Length: 336
Image (cartoon, rainbow, N blue to C red; front, top):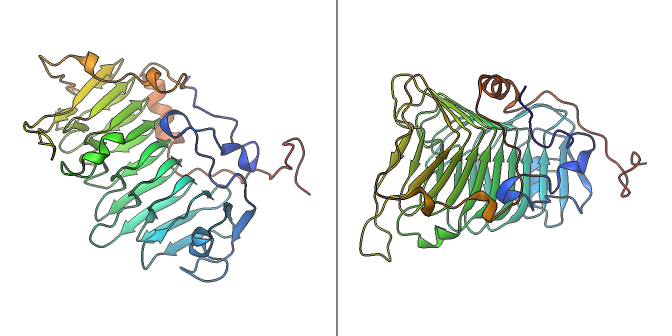
């Protein structure tokens, strides 16, 4: 039976802090701040999500209501915030979250659907943002990306998320002119890409570790390595339907280089189903791709299997789980 990571983080409210795996493992969100309660589904004003996210001090944001929040503009999240949807069912629509020049953000157990407008992503992470963890969110049907990570944003983990009904799912690295994106490091694990067309993800420049994800029924390709990127694909499941190409490579020229280059993919223990093709480049060694152990010591990994596929179809995205109890500073008893 598949074993999901960090199964104990729902034991108490702030147990999430610092528990991500991979590059986003240092994210503490609003650990060192008070709990802020969202009491209205209004886009702005007292008790709104936007009002909590704009405050400068650390906050652990929870919800006392369920329903849909219609965002008229991007909701910008300031540093040291946790947006914790456990215990309620909150859907963001219209626009998305904007993580701009911020650090230590945790976003957990939310739904994103129906974002409209030019350059409107479900979660837009740019520029210069770091120590971010996106966990157990459901994302679908935005006009641009579902999660885009660009312009020197780094040290990010995306875990147990569900992606559907979308074309350009996830872009990591802006374009060949943004050579500063060489710093980008992202971990994506235990996610389910359910019929999204492409970019699961597409990567420029950065280092990306993919493990124990399930990607099926893509429309162009599953993952794409472009200019100078390195993707370590480990024990993922790629299940094709009409389109068989799981791995794609695009050649582009970095602004400070004379020659165009593609990216590289290392495949380790991946499972290819229904004729899915994980073609690796010949003449370019996989040894040029980073290994995650160079950056972090442990991660929860199991072989790609039917049991893992079954679990990821159930345990990704928004979950109907209660809000964990808040505990005192000694982490031993409920808060008074």
